[in-house]
Length: 174
Image (cartoon, rainbow, N blue to C red; front, side):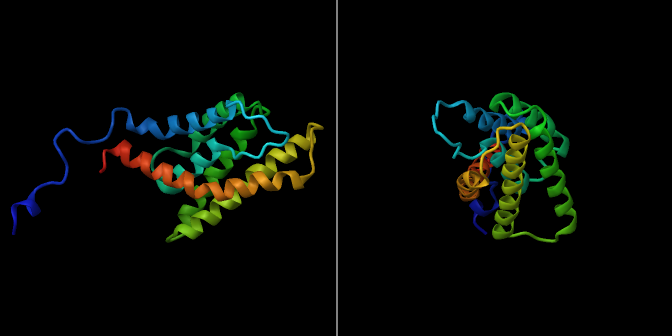
């Protein structure tokens, strides 16, 4: 057997970055901050980046944080985006609990199942935002919500890829 086969593939000093356990939450916070970019539109066509990264992290690695972390992350998202306080707290926590329940009930998931789960959660998130806006007399026709929903569903694979690359970097993998 050649010596290279016996050698470890890890280099000395290579491993998880310092405070690696907090990196997923910080990445969701940074993604939520993307909402303050100076993008001017008549209708909000861009996805909820914080929510996309939250569900991408949760579907990629279910052990990076407990479900209750969705509440403070949602509160930060509400404060940054100007949504009514408690909207993202509630929706994000419900999404995390639903994913916890699905993890206990399903034996396996492939890429397409995860994309379908993300699509359902994105639809739930956008519908909740639309309903709360309607209750606050700021409602718009639901047809104006279709483009952000479709863009968010189409952007989920990109968010999942970003999360996979961030996780590799976070854990010091090549």
